[in-house]
Amino acid sequence: MFKKIGAVVLSTSLVLSGLSIGTVDAKPDAVDRKGKGNKKVENVIFMVPDGFSADYASNYRVYKGEDAVWDDHLKGMFTTHSANSDITDSAAAGTAMSTGEKTNNGVIGMDTEGNELETILEASQENGKATGLVATSTITHATPASFASHVEDRNNETEIARQMLENEVDVILGGGKNNFLPFDQGGNQEKLNLIEQAEEQGYELVETRSQLLDNKQIALKKGEKLLGLFADDALAPELHRAETEEPSLAEMTESAIDVLEEDKDGFFLVVEGSQIDWAGHANDAAWAMSDVAAFEKAVEEAIDFAKKDGKTQVIVAADHDTGGMTTGSNGSMDLNADLLTDVTATGDYMATQLNEDRSNVSEVLKTHTGFELTEEEINEIQQADNAPLAINTIVSDRASIGWTSTNHTGADIPVYAYGPQTHKFVGFHDNTDLPKIIAEAMKLK
Image (cartoon, rainbow, N blue to C red; front, side, top):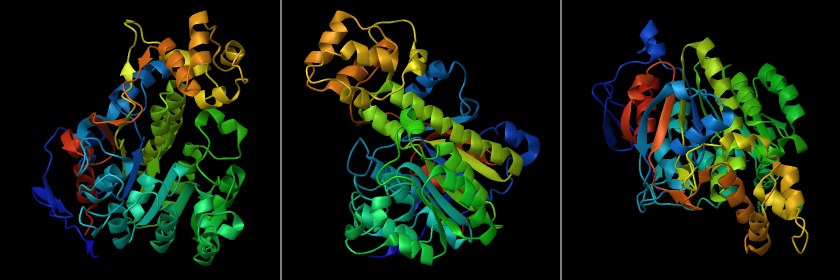
């Protein structure tokens, strides 16, 4: 196998990984009108709310009671199909968004013929920039993996972990500690102890929120890289964050920026709100909205930094829609997503609190949602083959949120962007266009 290296043509088009895109001609946004429209982009923070789409955005606005931070920065829409399917998975979508080339579902960082594709994170490294990955899933999950590894099967997370360290990504923060440890220490690696290897490579290891907030300064002073593995598997849903010693997505984002900005040549950072997608698969509206809220706080950290820095581009773009969320259900003309602010647990968790005959349905739902269930709703949960889905359906109906699927959909996805040269995202694109626009703005060689 060989690695394809894209070339940037800085005239009327851009070529990356063998594909070309015309330069977008659009009116600059507010930042650009201040004379920064063509200012050099030194840093990029690529933020991926996995599974998010326009209907998530609409429902979240009702949930929050006001506009989200990204609403003022909507630039365009893009398509998401993979090389072998109308509906993409996160591996193929992540590869398209990191390399500018389509691949088959399940494949990470490789084309349809098995050739490795250079990612925009790797191109940033070759241009002397620091790099980082942040996620609320295992850090070796499909989306972060697509920027720093090359495997034929997204499930090969132990090999993805090895490649992330081999590629010397400067900041790695998320879950998935088991993918870095050998079998004899309860991990998933056959023999390798990648945590020991990381420390030998100069990584500062942190495993709790307090360690991240304290030891971030140590990494800064020593000029070391930062590895944060805060759970054996994925991090907890935002609804259950307070019950853990895990940092929030916003705290991980802020810490990553603090370390990466020390590089005078700039940085490229990927931040994924991973569990918006998982909530969509579960049709769990409260989980979805609470994780979108956590993601928004991370975006606020990124934009606050970009405002002060003046040379940073922040892009918010999901890899695909999950669940086919709708804005309104059961013929209601009212949007009631704000009811979800009182929900304190996922449907999965509430189902674990049901007793064997499910006679306590009313009490469990009252405790965690505040809803007084009707007899019909109680019976639906008691008789359901899938109790979590039955709970989530009732909670979603109360919030006037519908779902069309428990899988991904082929919906077009909005792209939001803040900072210099973000007017180039205006228009209708494909997901493969995004890294090309970013590479042009960063003037990557």
